[in-house]
Length: 393
Ligand SMILES: NC(=O)c1ccc[n+]([C@@H]2O[C@H](COP(=O)([O-])OP(=O)(O)OC[C@H]3O[C@@H](n4cnc5c(N)ncnc54)[C@H](O)[C@@H]3O)[C@@H](O)[C@H]2O)c1
Image (cartoon, rainbow, N blue to C red; front, side):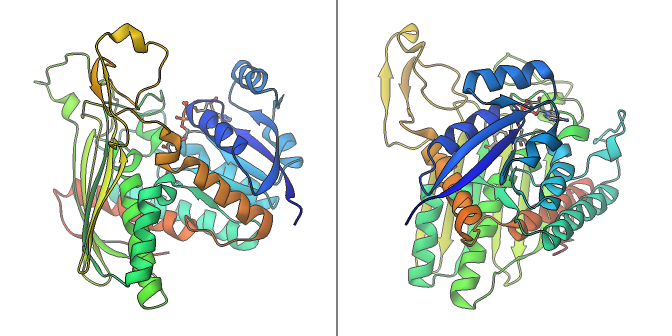
């Protein structure tokens, strides 16, 4: 069979745009031509274009005219408008996490610490509805870039659930590190919240995905979230916080610690922690406690490789593991971190959908359930941890 030919573009030229570009280069199922990039400033657009030998586009519309797939690698507040624009033209948007959220209607002085979380939840639900409506009218589909869904450990657990018809009783998991690098992170009006959405979306979506897999295996339909209880804290903003410089501490109006406890439609549960206050490199894992098996899915760190380096400077130009503070001593060195995080597998799967119509594992329903759960979580946290219903759209 000859491979399909697809033309693709990237909006954004920062951290995620770079790893998306690398993942596109590893796509095998189709011949993908990266046509060009568009970012906020002319300088960043041209710098990214030059580095990767692609065309720089000063406006998004011109880029959209010539492509089949658009990588949406821009701050969350812009995901909705750009995804809808792509869908309206029949272009498949690969949308980075979180799908969308509530950003205070763009008000410069929006303050997530004092704002109404009920209003935020309603606003986020409206945004999801607009995206789902646009998808329903489009010949393209939303490809929700939740890499955890495609991580090898989570996909192995999918296989176990499908082949053993296991019932998951409890999952617990975490995404944490010492603080996101993106300048937009820290401002609710740009990021839609703090660690609960920025980091919690990863293990939460993996947990929602595995209950979806369990449901479709056992009953032919997903088991979806029903209620949520959450707590949120801004630990680096406490007046007595001791700043030793190892943890990012300059957030504007967001939480840096969150606990999300979900009850599913069948009464089973998942508990997820998300934070920006954990040293020692990224800490990404999900443990599944099923009636017939137990699985610990490590994304990072994993002990596939361990290195001991007696002199820091020896490893100056060696990548060890995400967000590690030092390369000296023992380290859980990641031999292929992108692969352990599921990035190339995710992008390969998305191009299979765009080229051949394959089903999407990380689809708009999963993305919508994640956002609806998180914003009900914000309502709960604002009320000191009340149990809140999750609206399914
Ligand atoms: N899956 C993951 O593990 C992961 C990791 C990091 C970031 N992300 C997600 O990727 C997205 C982007 O984050 P990032 O870390 O790449 O941020 P970044 O700050 O590194 O880059 C953001 C880019 O967006 C561009 N941009 C801003 N406004 C724009 C506009 N109006 N039009 C066009 N371009 C515009 C900027 O020029 C910049 O190049 C976020 O949704 C974030 O949550 C996901």
